[in-house]
Structures are given as C-alpha cells and as structure tokens.
Image 1 (cartoon, one colour):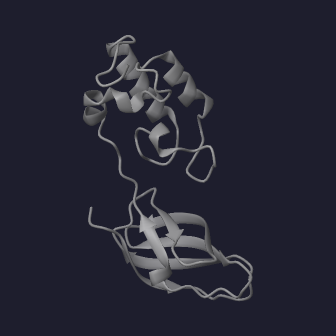
Image 2 (cartoon, one colour):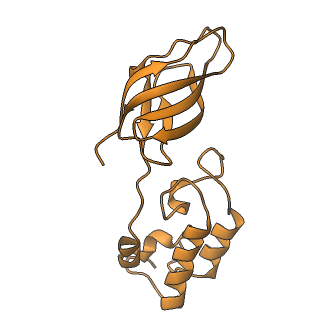
Image 3 (tube, rainbow, N blue to C red):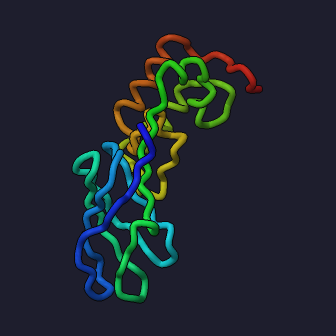
Length: 157
C-alpha cells in the first residue's frame, strides 16, 4: 500500500481540552495510528473509518489547539508474513535464549491483550504486526512450536 498522507484536518479547536478532529487523506489502513511530530501536540486516540478518513483525539500541552496536517503522521501497520517468520524463527525467541520454546510462549501469554498504547507493548512481541498481542500472535508461536520442538536457532548460542 502506498504511504498514507493527510490532506486536511477538520474540526474546531477551542481551549486546551482534548478535541476530536477528522483527518482526510489517502491510504489509511485498518489499525493505523497517528503520531504527532510537532512539539507539545499529543495524539490520544485514533480510529480509522475508511482508507481516506480517520478520527483522532488531540490536545496540545499548555496552549489552545491548532493542528496542521504537517504536524501529524499516519503510520500503517506492517504485518509480518508468517512464511518469513518460519524462515527466521529467531525473531520469535523473545527471551534470547537461543531457542523458541515454552518460555517465549509464556512471555506472550503474560501480555495477552496488551496494545500499542500500553507501555508494556514492544513491537517485537507482536509477530503479526497488528498492534495487539492477541490470539493470532499466540497461534503463530504455537504453530512453530508444534512443528519444531525446542531446537537451536541459527546464529544463536
């Protein structure tokens, strides 16, 4: 998918309270999130409605809010292909033990339901790349474990 772009922001900004605005543009993928690249601007929430429309809650620290498209960036999720992870199982060795094993599965299970907005979230613990440590991630790891009981990984001690 081509890179997302923001063409316009619509919504009224009054005071310093968080406001909800619409981002109009192109190439927004389901699960995309918005990050602020301007100092003091904070994105609190993102909901993609369509490929060309997203609703975002914004606030600016200490001053009235006025946001421009150049101050925001839409980041689309990049799913990691299951075939690639099968070829590179070391990426699923979360504890860096040199093996993909039950401990790696326990790591994911302990963080089940943690999403991008949670400080415990780490992208490497989200093999599907959808922004949420969920059943799809666990299924991917369980599938690998079922095919190859703990074995040494290339390039690992």
